[in-house]
Image (cartoon, rainbow, N blue to C red; front, side, top):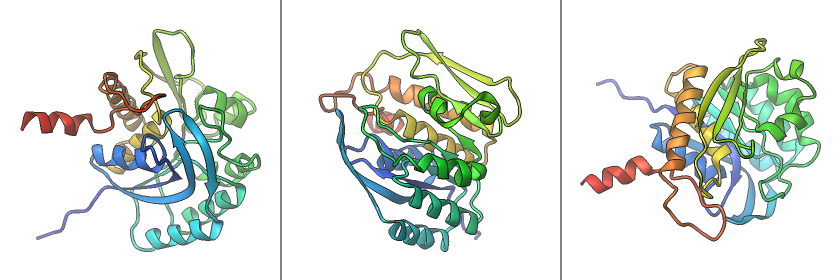
Length: 263
């Protein structure tokens, strides 16, 4: 009998002890969407529903060792990159992804947390622009991140970019714009705004969901559309839950909860 193969996502990101964002959110998301998640931790954070208190990056050597360990053994079907603490770690990630011919790379360029805590050294973005972005299948900034990363629309259009619209204030509907490299007319994904404080980790969750769908063999546009729909459902299904005293997480496991209730 021919053995089955996992759809594998490698997530490269920081750890969130509260479980709502970072590596923990990535693993939950991939598991919920039928993909097997491997993880390489780049940083340890102290955070909760109220925000990030402290963060500490792992050494480039330790990140390199993790990458060599997993990539020399298992070839992922997709890669999600989140928090990168410094330029040296960014260089290591780029080098290892090239060495092992990684594909379907989704980069969520996290630099500053929602609570205002800087998660990356100032020179990290420069290395990401020069070494990591050229490897990316998709980059997923929100509007403030895009303004700091891309000096103009011409630069943005040299990549595939999902420009997230969640930071637009006051709108009843949100529009995410998928720019396909070289095409100035974006593909629009419009969905209703859900009134809730449980939005911790939405950026991490969306980028890992896209990677999970790509790992399952879906094309870029389909993966993005499915991931946006799934995240919207996860937010809606988490509205009535209470977690902590700040911004709680989305409901990553709402499908499993419904299955448990039906048994």
